[in-house]
View (tube, helix red, strand yellow):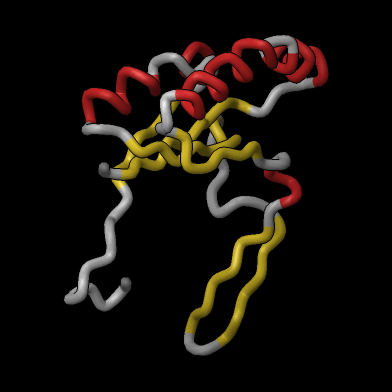
Length: 121
């Protein structure tokens, strides 16, 4: 079964916004439990705020480390799911169920499966 990375993006919010989002925890738990029970969930996780990020770049053999995310945007990567689905239609159907789709965005990307000829795998 193909694997898909489901990336959850949302605007970072103030305390009131964060409280409203945490109030949706039962929706998240129902969704996560349903994906697990259906045998689709491989992994998932929420991320800390962007101010905890460190971006690493190597340029001309010099390592550069910058506090914060790679880019300044209105929506930031907030979490992820890895799902085993029968195909794109199925994973997109599930992506629309994520509460983040109501106030942010949900990006779905197929995960490359390693092959014997693949230099990355």
